[in-house]
Length: 163
Ligand code: NI
Image (cartoon, rainbow, N blue to C red; front, side):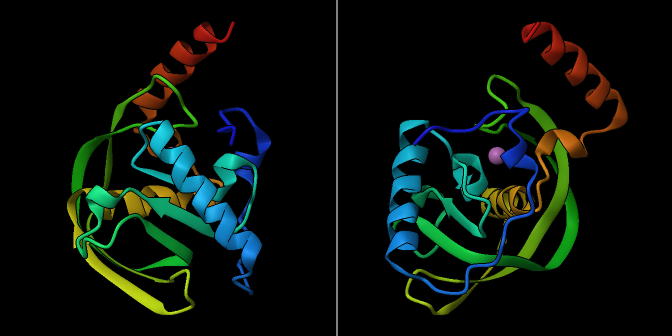
């Protein structure tokens, strides 16, 4: 699948909740995982492949339950604690990496591909990935939550690159 990059408007759409986990959703999640792996990403939201629906995938190395890649439907962050600054990138913003302040610990709740409710109470990279990917579903990119100075530098750098 093609990964959409800025300024593709689908990245700014509010993703719709998924009401029925049908074959199309299962197939899409499998294709997203394949696309994420090929692109060497840690996570991917459905918006990024052109489907503004509430589906995200996260790479297996971040899965604390060691059950392969994480597929989450209608994910929500229900609790956030503390703050941590760490470097991030995004497949939709190629070639740009910057430090972003996010909650250090989160409690996320979602539906898995079998329709079961799942929760992740986590810190570190998984907590960061969950925040990054759920932001995508709200049309928010990591470049939107940079400090004003970094945001200005990003605009300068990226507009030059795309000129
Ligand atoms: Ni991203």
